Every structure is written in structure tokens, then in C-alpha cells.
Image (tube, rainbow, N blue to C red; front, top):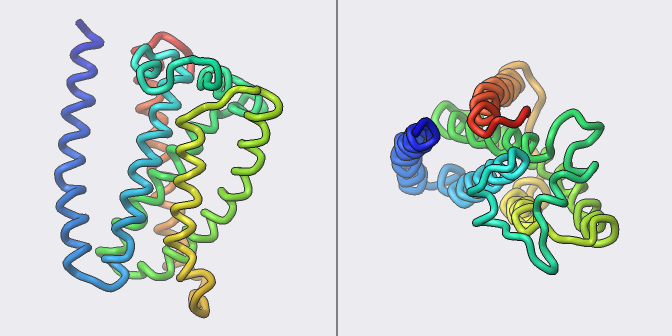
Length: 215
């Protein structure tokens, strides 16, 4: 009964967040300019956030995870996410880093589009995306050669990284980069990623209680 109530509350929370998010996307699209150009980026980051959340559920052995990534001849998400590469040094799951990456980016882009400095923060996030791209060859090779099983959701996340890059490319390489590093630009970036981390720690703790497995 408690799990059903929790699931209902989580679904309600998702709806309460989803409705204003869709309104915000429509608003950005009608504004045009950089605001319109980040709409695909926001959608990609939302999809990546959802995939990362599913991987976290997999790390907690949540039954619902098997519906999205069942075991088979070629695929075994559990085997991949529980491998040493799925939790480097046994400290933090890569899925949690995905939550931080996508969640922090979403908050920063949404705020910047409304408050200003959007161009500069797109450049910052583009550089962060380049760092994420460096992980993709390692992940593919590790699954293919070491684990010898594939994680479909992990591969989707890697695909999102590259699709994001296609959105960042014009800002980073097609035109001269005109940005700067100032406290006015760095403080919101650090603040929103820190806020995402703090919120996620609470949610992670709650999920660990629900599924009775330590985070």
C-alpha cells in the first residue's frame, strides 16, 4: 500500500512539473532566437534525465526497471550498471552523475533563458558536453569487450550526448566563441548543479527506503 501511495505521489509530482515545463517550451519557441534553438536541447536533456532515473531504479533492483531493460542474449542492463565501471571506485553510480548532468543543465538553461546570459551558459554546457563525449568510446568498448553484454538504456544516454553535441556544435565551432568567465556567469552554473545534487540526495534516500537497498 505504501509503495502504491509513493508511486502515485511521484506520478503526481511528475505531472506538476511536466505541465509548466511544456508551457515553458512553448514560450521559448514563440520567443525565437536562442530561446527557440534550445528547445530541442531541453527535450534531449529531459529524455536523458529520464533514462538516468531508470538506471538508478535498476541499481536499486526496482521491479519496474525490468520492463524497460529485460535480460536477453545480447542485453543485460543489470550486469552493466553493477560492473566496476558502473560505479567507479565503489563511490557513486554513473546513473547518479547522469542525474546531476542532465538535471543541472535543465535548471540552468531554463533559468538563463528567462533571466539572461543564455548564450554564455550554452557555451559552458557545450564544453561540459565535450567532456561527456570522451566517456562514450570507453563505455561502448567496456560493454563490448569486458562485460560482453549491452545496456540499452546506457546506449540511449550515450546517443543523447552525441545528439546534444549536434545542438552545441554551431555555438562552439561554427561561429567564433564570444564568452567570458565571470562570477556573474559561474555562480548560477555552480548553484543550479549544487541544487540538483542536494535535491537528488533527498530523492535517492527516499528511493533507497522504498526499495530497501542502500544507495
